[in-house]
Length: 321
Image (cartoon, rainbow, N blue to C red; front, side):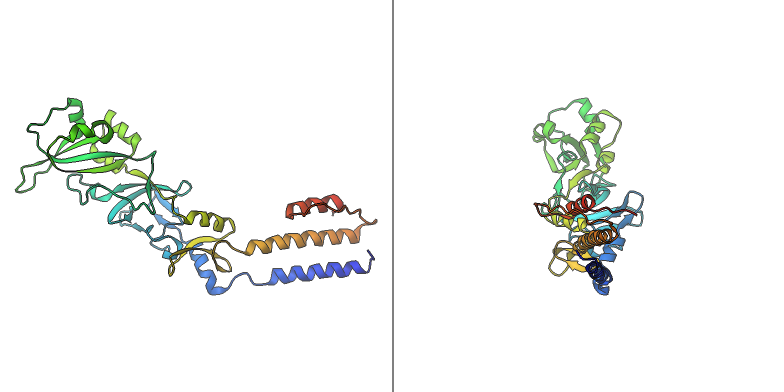
């Protein structure tokens, strides 16, 4: 290549490089949602900190999360979430495993008067963690007349009285594990019963250690939220440098980027790749100008990617200080 043509080539590369670098990458108002979701994480107390998508609440806007994942921080620094019509206390959130530990608030301080019957989750958003949830049954106001006796050991752990309500003859609660004792107690005459999920390992501690039923309930149970379809979208969005969110008008997943919202991923990474390619080309051009002998150029037989281009340039040009 003639020497006089090399500066023109280099000048052309520099011009394109500067044009891309100087072009705007964000657009004021479009960038506000990205900034809000990036900076505002949910914090409450010492246990629940730095929680992002799909959760929102308090200072974290609704468009940064998913409907049904609103968190509320109480004055006692406890976090609650409403699933269906029931309110649960959130004890822990594991964002990497898409799981959390929650407990029924209506049983938190008083297991004798629950506000609801059997607990249900919104299975479109949540599911029971099969390794961290097992059902137990509370039997309420059971008559001991004509009921078969049960062992002193079971009675000492699962049988306890509730406060007598005016006009009532009394209420007793019997706690059993469904799989082991459910059929046995199904013959008992009780006014009501409810199923409550608890942590399996804590249930073992309850049976073998000094733990009350109230303490067992307060340890909660595991719930997963990884089945919602938004997470595949969110992974791609995060990888591209964006913040996952929701279009509150259409309720569809969206990716908030530096240069505004995108349907799935941020486009800025394409510019970075182009800059990398131009940078390699620029370095190669400078090396050719400074080289005392024409370089030996090997023509590759396959299409090169960015990584291949870097290795190709290093192998064919003497690049140094």
